[in-house]
Length: 105
Image (cartoon, rainbow, N blue to C red; front, side, top):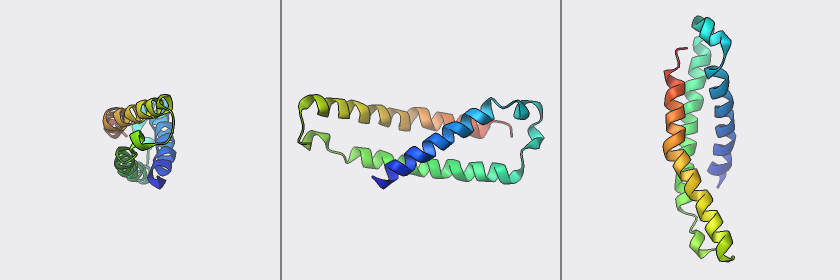
């Protein structure tokens, strides 16, 4: 589950970078202002984010919520949350990463 907490941290960092880069007036006016080091750091962070996402997907698949000793409503809610996270990790996150990589830096 360490991968899950690492992923969450990187996930929020990613969204901060994603929003800042896509809506930055500096980038839209002068794309040459971004240094190569910044692009390299961003690519490294995105790679780490993808690795953490994959590890988190493996962890989520191993949860075995049906074996938990709790009421069925809690199990159902937990399973719904896991399915939502899996959809986001498999569909939404890769698309956002691709969009961020395609931003003309």
